[in-house]
Length: 365
Ligand code: HSE
Image: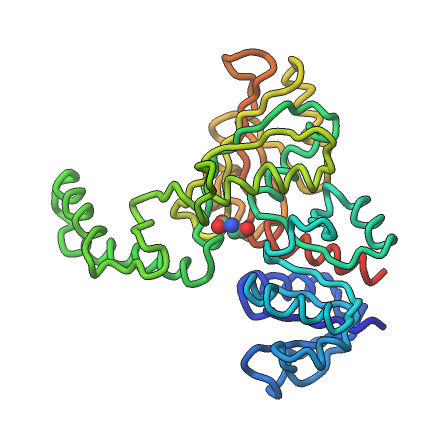
């Protein structure tokens, strides 16, 4: 049985990965070792074929004994430890949630429903670095897989509505803290007129005492149209990732342009995206619907009507779910080669943990 080491398994992506592995009985297929940056020697989580004590994630000694390492510890950890392990001659398979190695030539961005064959081929050829994609990119590709498969897409513009979870667990809690502050202030004046309340709230969210250590700004009663760092061309790094990562996953020979504005909104763990899709030629709505619907087991086409949209195509409806719904699909007034769509996906499942679980399963086969 292969030895698999897990690093960062207690964080948000790591915990979701552990849950999914337990529900799919994955631990039967490997010997598991749990690593920690701070609690070496403590009891490890009890799983089938699991080593009982935690080992140090900050020394290479035990890590080097693993056949496969799965890291959800974050980019700084990868930056620090991955080169050391390779320098010390470690030839095992590195599976990572962080973006650090995504665009390196010797790594494959994994997204099982879309590039399973490529992953399999890469494993066969001896590739050893596998990295999960950016969450919005992965969710967009699962939703539009049918159109990419047919090579129908000329370009896509995606306007995102990204949940607090994408910024980390502390940010999720901060959003809830912000909401509590709003609720408390409202509780003091429930009988006020709407415009008076709005003035009170507008003041509250800009007060120094409003909780915003992590976001730096109010997200409750607000949206934040910048995610990640600044790129020299005016894009945010989150916006930059869409085109480069999607084209790498799709292994395109001619770059498909993808661009838009990435926006943080007050949802907790599901990312949504409003899409403008430019096809290479006009297509019938029914054809586009069928291509999208039948592309993979996870995409779900939501009929373009108000009732189904509001019941099935929202972060509230999708939280904790594996399927990736896409709806609001219709030709646009610009012409028969332009389609409008809206998609939502759980940022922690297919957006982060699930692609890692799938490549781990394949690496164990
Ligand atoms: N960069 C994403 C976000 C996290 O900020 O929402 C998942 O890749």
